[in-house]
Length: 525
Image (cartoon, rainbow, N blue to C red; front, side, top):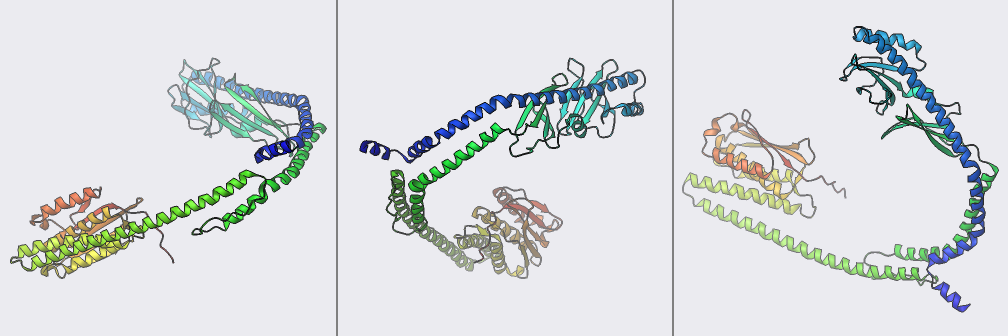
């Protein structure tokens, strides 16, 4: 006995539960199996035979309706083929056919090419083709219009007549005399199908049985789903036995699972839920369960939390080093830009000609533009949004006003900027582009105005940047020495932005669509 108990103790929890439940539920399972087999043998065949008979009757009724409509079309074709065929004659023939139809039917007349001559109201739009079936009648489903169409042709006159039975008519033809909701009818042809009605279970114990039958010489298939006969005494026993089995299984299973699984898992869940990042280790309570898998799982959780704590500490240390390194790089780049700007400023003071001073000023403005991009990128580095174009262009406009030549001191720059963000690869050419346009405007018309606008472009992750300078309107700037260089530089910057600029020479406008970063919600805190 001791040896057997030790062997069972070494089994996994799943095997233990399987053995206990199988032993306890075996008698009930045998009884339920016997009842199920007996019920299946005596009742299933009767229900399927009933469904097949009902499906065959419905299919015959639908085939008859198609045949009735086909006969009417043949008569109409014979009449129309004997005389002149036009829309008026066709409509008159169809009006004469309508009173004799047993079921509401739409008709149409086509040429062999597919051109429609006339049609009654409600005929669907797909064109017809000449019938290919051996019977000379093509029956097909128009899934989009939920209709059954049948076509016949008179090849001597080159006419094709078509009739359609819409879904409402099909429902009247196919619905057997049974309680509403007890019959589901589906017409199928290849991949196309049209549901005429749907069957629902009349009682919780009802069963649905499906049978099929060919329609129109097998061109279509009718699938009929009906409620089976009410459940019988033997079936009541068959239903109750699984319930009794479930109750017994639930009781026995709960006792086993609660002792072997639920209580130990609840203790472990409480310990894991109380664990917080930063804790030294996961404190798993001592497990008294005989399930060694759960004990091993608790040990695995404790080991995992230790590895995660070490890994988090390493990641935090690496992130801190990376942040410090990035800050140092940005700080040095900013200092280098300041040194370059200072050197340019010193050299400009020693310039002896206006041309040299103008050249130094031009270089100064471009270094300032690059410095502005870098400062704004550095300011938004930790927010991970990209460069704020509103702040960038605002600061750039202030620098351009401050470094404007004496004759352009009165140049007015107005801003209308939406709050968009962009990557540094976009911000640099944008800053240089604005600098080039404003500088040319200063040289061509120092007393003019410049309007810078940033707005949505109507496309995802796109914004439209437009710069309008009154001094660039017309053709007088084309003769300026810097104009040719301006065109080359703006074309290169546009290619860098991967966009085609739009110029309006009449108003002096330059517009381009630029890529922007995805919007990040503002932090309310």
